[in-house]
Structures are given as C-alpha cells and as structure tokens.
Length: 181
Image (cartoon, rainbow, N blue to C red; front, top):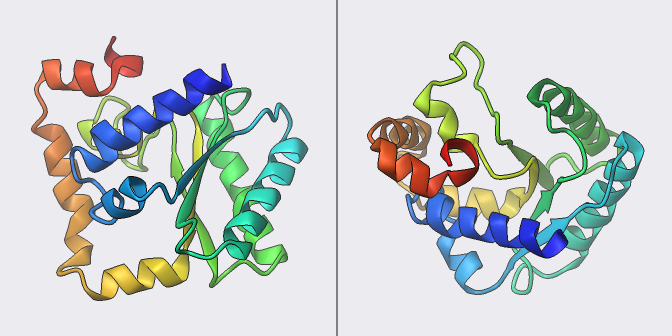
C-alpha cells in the first residue's frame, strides 16, 4: 500500500500541482528530487504527531540543497475532512509548542477539501484536493525567497481557482480519478 500511496501522491504532484502550475515554485525542487514523500503508518493522533515531529526535524536538519520540502501522506486515518480539519488545529499547536513557527509551516490537502463559504462541489476546492490526506511541510525561508522574486503572489489563489473552474469534465476525470473516476 505504501508504494501505491507514494505513486498516487507523485502523480498528483506531477499532473496537478506542477502540470497545472498551481504552485509555480514546485517544479524545480521536484525535478531535482528534493521533495520527500513520506507515507505515515499512523492510525492515531499521537502516532501522526510523532511522524510529524520526525519529519519536521528531518527537514530542519537537512540542507535545502538536499531536501526542499516534505509531503506526509496519511492513508490510515483522517478520511473525514472535518476530522482532518480538527487535526490541523493540533498541527498548529505543535508548531507553536516546539518552536517551529517562523521556520516551518504546514499546508493542507485532502480528497474532500472544502474552503470556508464554498459548496462541496465548488471547482475551486480542487486546488487543495489530493488523493490522500496530506500535510505539506514548507521551509519559510525558501518560501520567502521565491515569493520575493514572484510578481503578484496574491493573485495565485485566484488564478488557480479560475484554472480549476475552466477544466472540462474529461480533464477533471483524468486529473482527479480518485474523485471523478
């Protein structure tokens, strides 16, 4: 199962995140093999927090030239988006409690991701829909460096939502087989 989850996440990164240019900063580290995909075996909050801590430490301790970012896939729990969303509150507390704020941050992706004030079937939600519940660990220093050289960063989310809304039904089925298959 671990191999399948890894492949699912890799394909999502290649076809959706990079392929649709949702994150204009992802292609370079991905192509340089500096994106780590870790499949968590956790089935409890405590075990997942242990995995999170280990991956935060690995990312912090590894030079950026070797490892830019980490994606933790969570196939054994948090299938329900509300549960996942509540777990994100623990993640935020964890980052604060262990002093990771200002160094690392966590972005969230889930098969049923839904932005506040949207309907579940709003195409804009596809920007954060992934094949598995994911925690994306990001170095703030790297993020600040790329954002400083990117014009109109604030327009990225709006552009991504427009891109998703422009997808045909066939494109959605191809890009998101776990949602529209």
